[in-house]
Image (tube, rainbow, N blue to C red; front, side, top):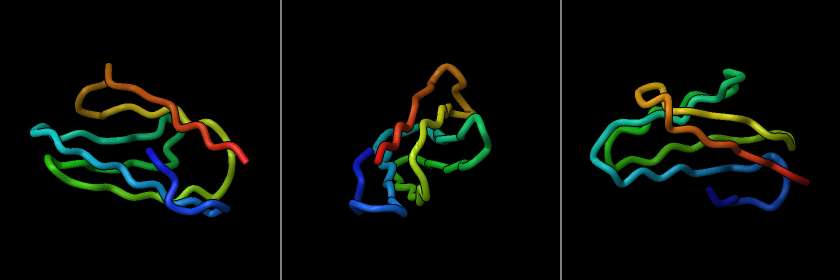
Length: 69
């Protein structure tokens, strides 16, 4: 993911070019972005911190969003 702004709040874009549906779902429930095939999802992050996320359809697909000031 790449930041589109340099100060808080930050806007992040998730791009998915594959053929299967996925989600980016925060373990702490702070976001849940649905990503149908060949789609784009966006979210705004208001503060620094690390958030673990996973795909609801494919739970083994995981990641961590690490926002630092």
